[in-house]
Image (tube, rainbow, N blue to C red; front, side):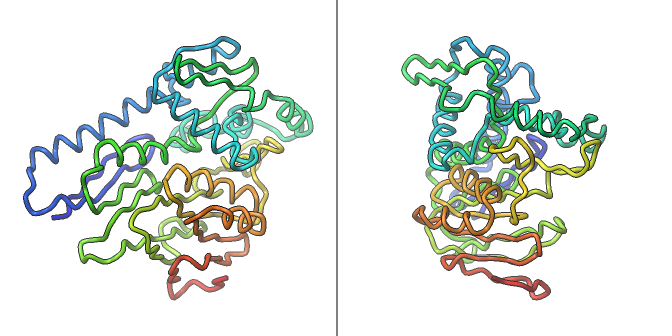
Amino acid sequence: MYWTFSFDAWDTTISGTVDVGEKYDKSLLADLEQKIKKDTGVYSKICARFDETSEISHLNTHAGVEQVVSGRLIDLLIAVQKAYVETSGIFDPTILKALENVGYDKTFSDIAYQGISAYSYEKRDLIVSQHIRRPLLREMKVNKNKRTVYIPQGMQIDLLGIAKGYWVDYVVQTFLLPYPSLWLSAGGDIYVRGTDEKKEPWKIKVQDPSELSRDIGHFIYNKKQFGVATSGITKRAGTGGAGKWHHIIDPRTGLPSQSDIVSATVCARSVTDADVYAKTAVILGSRQAHSFLSSWPECEYVFVDVEGKVHSSNGLSFRPTPSIRGLG
């Protein structure tokens, strides 16, 4: 039997389908769902930047002083350091001030309800110059043995670019490890293992960035297990005093990315990697992103560019929706 569950957390939906076999215990499955749901609350207290009591908020407000933190935050920050190195600094969590500058200074549901903070690009050059003078991530010091973290004065870290993908990997390895087939999604960051109810490879739908209620197609990736993540400039975006904005910040400028990629869906060995690579692809643009992603094993992608053209790597069996044109 394939068991399904779904609940809301972190301004998104957590959902999954798990092959629990023919001999299953309903009470155990209910308990498993509660454990997963409870962990979303635990994780929020680690990395939610809109919660002043979270660990990452405490770290940001105590920049310049070495802090003792939880083991899970240590592991997450080590993953961040790894991603920063692997992407040559394109994946960079030290863009919190830049996010606030464009107006992403509250949860997106609050932004949709209240509107974004007033802001103007009249001081654009000043903003860029301040951004490029910020402390760099390589100045952060993480001591796994002592469980301490030091960030220098002026550094502000946002973990939302990696947190969901990292959490999905954690849940799969912690709560769902015994199950041979499953998928788990946190707002579109997905871990896939095994086969679906028909014993066929899972089909992964790709959202249309210009109309989020529909799909541009689907693909099949013939690996026993892999992570999938999508990053784009249309879902968490808006219009305010700064004009149009989105939350994918180019760390080289401190401003929203201006590349030719509107959305990138990436498959990788883990959801954490897929999350990092998808955001990096959007910032780099299609030509550089292809070269970057091709350098990583078991990494495939689907891009949608500013003209609506769809680009798919050779390792995916991508099937566009019949009404969609421009497959590259």
